[in-house]
Image (tube, rainbow, N blue to C red; front, side):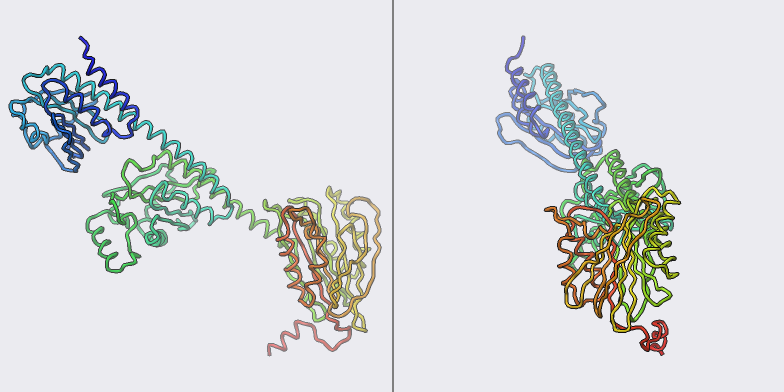
Length: 620
């Protein structure tokens, strides 16, 4: 015969189990129908951690609406024999035969004289087990009670399994979201130190309470970043990361081991993360006496205290180890991340760090090559105030083709040259070196600007250069009346500008065909005079073609910006124009090169010593 009352109650129990977020939420739905069973006077459930640690006991007596609940962490060694295997076990035991040492339920059950304890013990997970039992009198159908207990336990186990599964799915979704966000954050920077700081910040507090990041150098691990949920303990972590020999030895032992290692308990003895009652008490005393807590031990601060756990993950990218990340946890075991998650995070962090390291190496190599393509210094003279500025515009850091130089000539004049090779990269760099050194050599020998450009064009055609370039050459020859003769020759390059001492700006009108296009090309020169404190500005199109968001070019405001710099020296003019163009630019990635020469008005034949000799005499 079917018991409709129990069947309906069991159906409601399954429904409640599908919605429950905690097993304890089923307590009322379990106890009520069991207490309604004839002969049942008491329902009691327990939750055990490991074989013998009683975590929770709940009992409800027939006719009462108030359960007796005991939340504890009491060790009951004799209860270890009750631990079930993989399958639930139902047992009948006379209450009189229960030993208090192994049965904490005995005291409650003895209030029903002559009762029998029918109990089902079952495993919930790897961390512990549980029991659900009832106290019955002689009128109870014990076999029916056993069946109902087994069915109720089935619901409890299924509820617990479902909660764990949903928790894992939610954790997996959160982990995936965190990994995706971590990748975006770490990949958004190509600065090594900023990337490392982001690695640490992203993980705290989502993954752990604290994190330390080390780079692997030839001499060993190098601390670069640390963070903690507590500002005070972050300082302690930073000190540990820099100076602690225990951690340094641990990281050195780890070497290239790819597996994430977790350390806790005795494994942390002798470390700054060791968990001992004495250390905790000492920390509390220190915090109380000093107030600021600067000496706080990482992982042992306030609130609920949990045993400190640390994990160390090797950061490996493209077949090589780039560093390590150490996490410090002060949380329940259930909230520790999985090894798989930490490996995935470490892999992403390692790739971001390696990309930043490779970018840094490439940046240094490109800047070094760029420096070799430009003059190490400009001529020093009392007649000319010379300066230059160069701004790399390509974020990918390919070598650019802009170049400049200034050389003294046999007749006492100075030649200024500036040019721009089409494109970027190694081929452009090779052509840049050829063009600058060819022009420099010819101009130093006294070759006039037009002939120098023609001979460079011939050399490019003979070398079958696949790229063209633009250039402009200007010679500055002082005259006895205090003026200087400006002779300019251009090969398709932007025209130089002259800033007069009165603040007016004029363009040097000259033009000619690009270099490297046709075999026989001649270039005409343009001459004009400049006076004392007049300034000549040569530049590449990276300056004029810097474009704002609205589409206007910096070229349209360059004369006004240059005029505003009247009275400043060459170095200030060069740097100011470069920075203004850079700030103005919303689009465009071309390099910016400027060469600025201000005529001081000192005529030839003045009683002046060469500048180096002046420096020597002044020093004496």
